[in-house]
Length: 101
Image 1 (tube, rainbow, N blue to C red):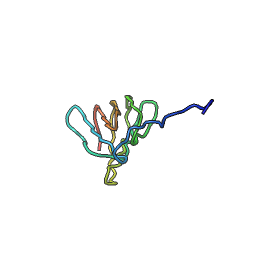
Image 2: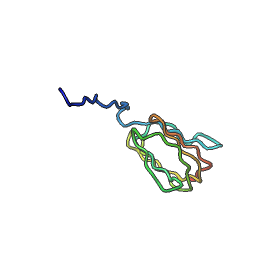
Image 3: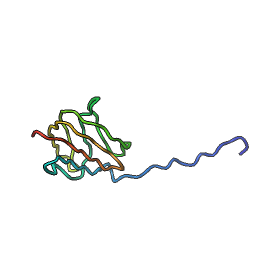
Image 4: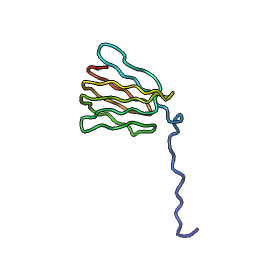
């Protein structure tokens, strides 16, 4: 094996079949808590979607729609007036200043 390099297989964290935990909180109440397949949020620099295995992120939110695809396939939509999103190890937290709908 002279001249050949050995690269071990890449290690990847295994997640629970594309399911994430989402919690949405406002100062007044818990808006949603449960298992989801995806979350689309209105980031300050543009909308983006969070899926299973998303890189860790903290981002500010502007006023706009949040679209959630629950683990059972049901869709949930509501509008936020601003806030922050955090994603870490398939745990997504939305801390919003207010909601409409």
